[in-house]
Image (cartoon, chains in turn purple, red):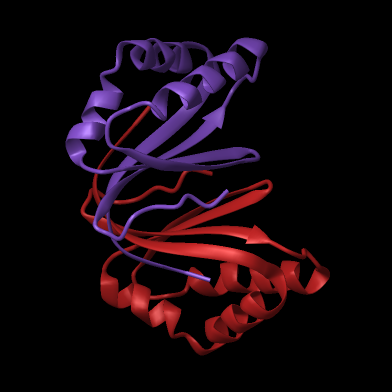
Length: 103
Length: 103
């Protein structure tokens, strides 16, 4: 799915990850987070693709809404489990989307 | 693979796509472009993941280097074929990476 996002500027958080395990608990948590993020203030959309590398990009209205999601209590639990059990490593990049175009 | 990128600020081009066909020609062109982009001035790295949705993110030193790659003659041919044969639709977002962190 290609996210429908408003006219720039807006923000993107690129989450690139390599997993070390992919168990039932991970799938449940991922689904829970996907539902939860959509209720967050300032959330604009999400795109995801996975093979050996996983890329999830979430789009946001502003930096404040990104911070609120990072500090969300349930999301903090997910982040802790992610580091402990599921991810070999990951990188997060916070970006300002300056322009976009589509075909 | 998680790209090794320098300390921000730098740029990211997010290319999100839905394909309509995935033939031998596409695979050849994708490989050719992957080799070519790495020789571009200002290219910093690339990350890619694909299932129904494809996401490819290339990282760049500045906007000038992004423009030079967009206008590269061989890349222009690939873009034309992409629109004509391979992509149902796609979206390109040009972003300024403001901060990053990793685990």
